[in-house]
Length: 154
Image (cartoon, rainbow, N blue to C red; front, side):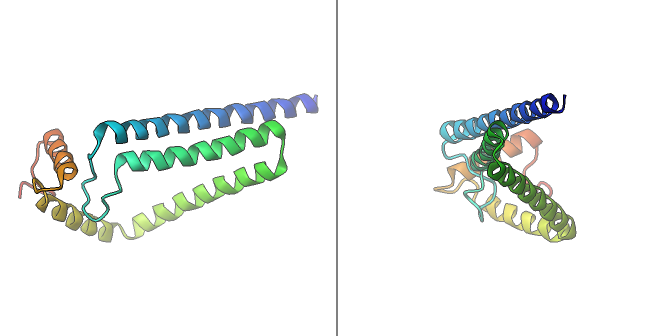
C-alpha cells in the first residue's frame, strides 16, 4: 500500500513538473516570437534598453524550463541529487521573490520617483533619430491609456 502511494506521489510530481516545463516552453516561445516579430520594439526605459518584455519572457521561460526539467528527471529517476537541486532552486526562487517584495515595499517611494524620472528621460527621446523602439512603445502607451505624459498631459 505504501509503495503504491509513493509511486503515485512520484508520478504526480513528474506530471506537475512536466506542466511547469511545458509552461516554461510556452513563455520562452512567446518571448522569442515577440523578439522576432516586434524587432526593435524597446522598453519605455532609456536607462535599461535591454529590459524589454521579450527579453524578460525569454529569461523567465528558460529559468522555468530548467527548474521543471530538473524536477521531472529527479522525480522520474528518484535521484536524490537532482531532487536536492530542484529543492534548492525552488528555495532560491522563493527567497528572491520574498527579498524583492520586501525591498519594493520598503523603497516604494524611491522606486516611484526613479521610475518617473527615467520615464520622463525616455519621453524626451520620443521621435528622435535612432529611437524607433522607444517611440513605438510610447505611441502604444499613449494610444492605450489615452494620455500624453508620465504623470499628466505635460
